[in-house]
Image (cartoon, rainbow, N blue to C red; front, side):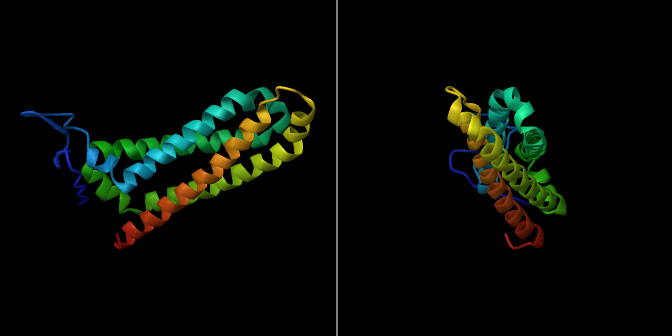
Length: 176
């Protein structure tokens, strides 16, 4: 299946300390592989986007409307699915081999790429049209820079999921 040879970490799972192994149920090889690091990056982007949207977007929800709810929905759903996949892969090497070679991961990442791109585009439009004028006249109006950062991170998350979709498709087709 998937073999992740990482120095200092036992191939069968866990960490070697003196004469024993700890955390044997965790597949640290996945976490330190390119697939695992990509999943962690996707989770980090979704977390930061969600935090920015909740802290700075909700107070101006009446101004930006559906752009906020669409972006919140996208980041929450993508975070949840990516977290479930990462947890499965971290605790089962067999899951990585079975799920990654199925079409599910390819389709999920392609849809996540499209959803993040469209949500970030709509948020960008809302920022420029509705938040930027308020930013110019209201001192201390932090919603505009925060939502701008959120939609830039949304584009980055779209790129990350797009790369993951390509890697998943290559794994699905057996190219590795």
